[in-house]
Length: 199
Picture 1 (cartoon, rainbow, N blue to C red):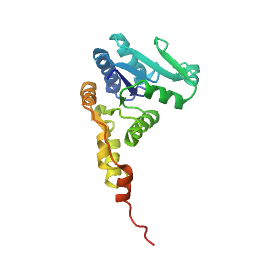
Picture 2: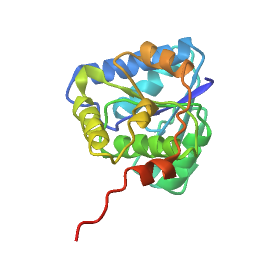
Picture 3: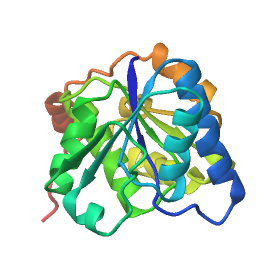
Picture 4: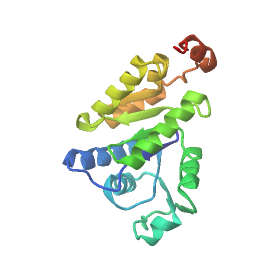
């Protein structure tokens, strides 16, 4: 576990514990000598995570698009800031540089990035752990909806193990060390759950 990609927000969120946990995550990454890979911005929980990692002697790689640089949100304190053309390029580079993925509380972009990583794991495209830092129960309803998808047989129950959850950075990263990729015969499962069409 040499590097972890952190998906997080360009906003600080309403609850101070979101920033506090971002800071704790940065400290934990630095202490464990794990490089932070993130979206390269200087604002919100993104900026807090990066600043904390750097202040505690850690290593940070930021990946940001040209568009966002022109909006003046790029973190110019980074020695390793990589500028790419598109959001697709950004996500691909962040994934290639990372050994695992963590989502802090965030908005649409954070959720989209997290679920892309989970989907890649489900399809066997990548075998890296995906985790949610469930700060103050922020993701409780999302996790409940995942269970709802499983109940309705759109997601196989085995795939629930693709998502590691903890409310502390230390606890989540410890789960990453013990992670074993989930392997399921998706085609066989899909056939076994197919229902006849009623006429």
